[in-house]
Image (tube, rainbow, N blue to C red; front, side, top):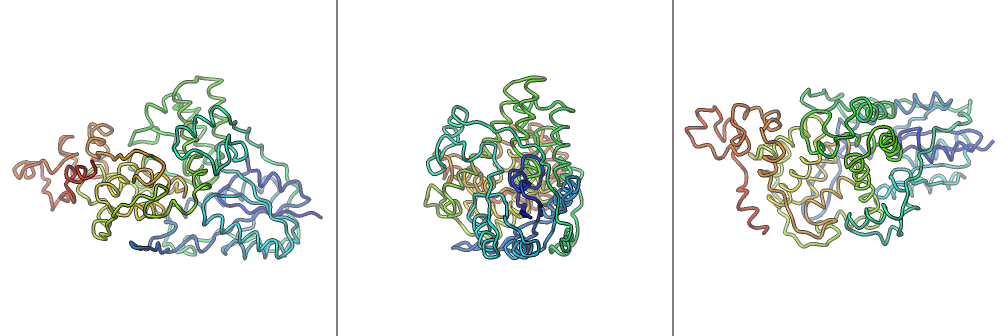
Amino acid sequence: MDTAVVWFRRDLRVHDNEALTAACDADAVVPVYCFDPRSYGTREFGGRHSFTYQKTGARRAAFYREAVADLGERLRRLDLDLWIRHAPPADALAEVVEAVDADSVHFQTLPLPEERAQANRVTEAATSVGATPERHWTHTLHHVDDLPRPVAEIDDTFTPFRKRVERASRVRDPLPEPDPPGTPADSPRRGEVPSMTALGFEGIPTYDERGVLAFAGGETVGKERVAEYVWEADRLREYKRTRNGLLGEGYSSKLSPWLNAGCLSPRYVQSEVDRYEDERVSNQSTYWLTFELRWRDFFQFQFAKHGGDFFTPGGIRNRRIDWRDDPAQFRRWCEGRTGIPFVDANMRELNETGYVSNRGRQNVASFLANDLRIDWRKGAAYFETRLVDYDPASNYGNWAYNSQVGNDSRDSYFDVVEQAKRYDEHAEYVKTWCPQLSDLPADYAHEPWELNEGLQEAYGVVLGDDYPEPMVDLDASQEKLE
């Protein structure tokens, strides 16, 4: 009997999953997910400004536990049993292959050096026990084989890349759920989703009611979010206008946690956009969601092209910037105690919920890298720990971009106060996450350092006591960049 193993990575779904579909050509299928201990606990980022960070934070760990549990339920409906291991994938998959005498191991291929190294270890392990490794590209809107140019030749700036794929590429139709043959009846133990304690956490984080959405992992919830946002609330028609919002669940699609864990296929999301355009309206907003999916693609292909160069201090532009190493200032940024309310509000939301808007991410990244001149990779690693929707290519690619060492030839930065006044005109967002400023007029809420002593006393906001004094003179720091 021909038996295929499917190793699930960041493709935790049964719809549009080429690895699963290909495996179902065999006589029996064994799906496997591995909670790799090396993805949890602390990690050392070396170099001149070395630092330690947590590889996976509690919120993303909880999300993945839910996503794997949901995957198991959906596979059971297809007469497949998900095997779960809390071990390095190469070791676990070798054990599974030998246990069922598998002929092949199918799995998703991913672009980052660490992800490639892990796939290579699995390839060696599978080959050593007599199974053929089969890799599948499953996580982008445009398949790598359908690009107008080979990966090594794609443009390093987004606009030319986008125009080329819009003109000369295609988006494949999503694959339906497969009709698998079933899992071998005599399989050994399947395993269970490890507890939060087993993964190194004290428990499941509580939900902060100020958050935009209580993100729960899984293909089931991901598809429900698509249905709610696109069809029930009918918000896709206004996406371009509202996407820079800061409060509430409706200002953007917020599909990124499910896309980045692979609970949703970007091609499935695009198929829903196409259907919406056919049945309701086609406008700039519907196009813009596709535009954002292509931004996501862009960074995936950029990391496939440049690899580890992205992780150097000067990034792919090899810029020579004298990054500072100031642990005290970095800690204040992490904790949302910079004294710059728009920065603090976004960092506090990130810390308490695992999510922050794209507008907020750009501003706090620019502040750390361009105003404080602290090594941008520290900020990117902190996001890696905190984000529930962390994707390595999107995270490090966007951080490099906003730190002037990535995919942009311009030297630009964000004026965080101007941004705050533009996108949080009435300071509702700042006051939500920095309640010490709740009684201030909007202009003072964005610039509390403009309060004289009398006004501080009158409003009950004493700088350095009720709210931190600004840790940097923004005008002076930005003059240095000009």
